[in-house]
Length: 153
Image (cartoon, rainbow, N blue to C red; front, side):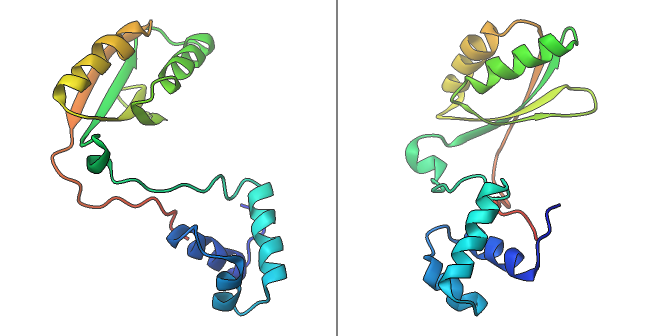
């Protein structure tokens, strides 16, 4: 972990709550002037601690109301095969998250689609075009209980 002090952590906390806060607003909340706050935020960005700023979109309101966790097991394992799978899966616009996991499966995908028919198309066309998939196991989300993007600090 980088050398983060309490002010850096507070800046990160505030930006995770609202990325639209101005430097002046943040400075007032951490009791510093805007210039050092600006410089700290730029350092956090340069060091890759802050990766990017995004708008959080309500999935159902844009027609992506079905969330599916799909566990993938590869037929064979090698560095080249793993890299190829990662390359292929990141090309799919429906895969929002992909994790290399331990256990019975190799990867866990979070897929967001319109409905079951759309998921079927994803399985047949997106996953179906990727070589070396041995099996895919799907778990459908019935309801979201807690969904946070913020990293606990």
